[in-house]
Image (tube, rainbow, N blue to C red; front, side, top):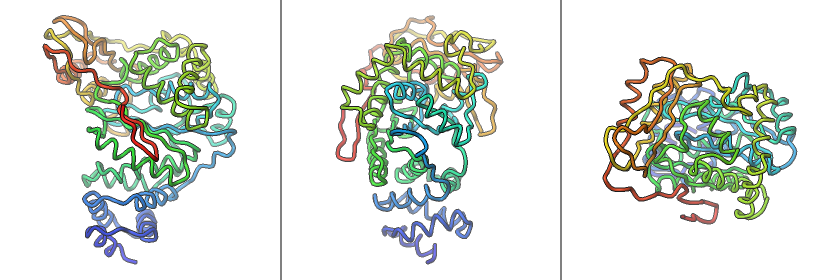
Length: 440
């Protein structure tokens, strides 16, 4: 078998066999297939796509290129959630404790932020002394005793994906739906959970800018999960506006705690209600409406917040900042952003809002960048709100005053002000299962 022949076959629109895909992935990982040949293959896939069978085979090959986590040491059904990333997306810190409080285990490996999107692990590390790197024994113990644990990705998980992503990043083949599906689902399958909920973001702050592309990606990923024997559902949610009001690591943890107290912003609360209910549905806790009632109950009685506190303490974190968020370290400098004209906020370029927060120190420009956990933005006004010239529409936080000017300019450029009130958009566009696409 020659890589040259496989490239030619895919270039001409052919379907690669299971043996050919395994040969390709194994050869790329062991170095016998060079970057230039894999680059040609990725471009052929970019233009010609992949069948569901090809996508599943490639996903499994990438997943099996490294460690396959065995979660059998954790009692009960384990449910995972993956978000394709966004701005203000602190949902994991809310829904994982909710689901755990309802009696379903959450053993989750999360990532760090890069570019304009935030990472759950970075947010957790804004909690003093919080450990996000645990041994397997420690990880299992935390989940079995508290019902949940969220840690960083560790070990040799899907090494083929790391190599492929680095190559896609420099060959303009990142935005290929089958390749995105392979990348995400290979790591989800390697992580060993029984059920997978996918939160596919769409809009200006998301990787999938259009609902059509988000739906195609959701269908591809659900098919992979189901064909691999995992109960899988996807929700397509809005990322045309930042989620909630707070952008930045400790600021987002503070807002997550408020939401678990039943005091969170309406949009964040609604999205988390639906995500958590679908996780419970996958675990067999009942239909969606029954699961929503369970979610509301554990927020109202405080049990969800108790689960978050228990996890923080079990992973060495200082839970005093969760019990009273005023204990979080505060940025030494703040700047109120004033409206420059009167009218309705018609649109916010969410990616630009995320970049503005990163410019204040809340995100990474490279994987080695240091994060300022206290930096970020609180949005006082969002799309649909009427503002008068001079109103405070946002507050920025940073450890250096000189960071404000550029970040303010970026944020102000993200806004579109209009005389007409914009139409309200849904927070959840669709629910995708193996059998249907239900649009809302």
